[in-house]
Length: 123
Image (spheres, rainbow, N blue to C red):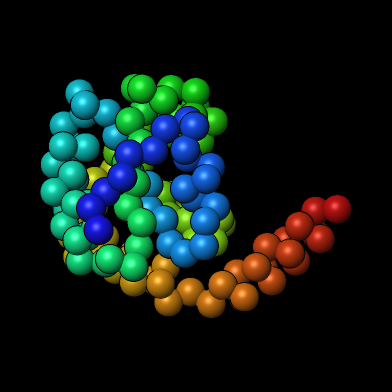
């Protein structure tokens, strides 16, 4: 599967569906974004069971601000609508593959339990 573009209108729908979604926040003027783009595209072809989305931060400035993106590229990982990972900076292919595998290997029942415990502790 190749990458898809997300916008302020489609972002929420994309990240909340079942399964794993990676989002690459980028801008056309960003050198490191352009360097990371082939790595991201190659991963999208290798991991066909994962959705790979690209968010143009220039065209979607309100969403980028809401996501508190301070630097680009910023990579985010969601699974079943839960953000599991967010990191700024381009990533080497091996490191990116490792992150993808870690997200795939997570026990989501355990993640949801931890979130519930954390939320209960805040009340």
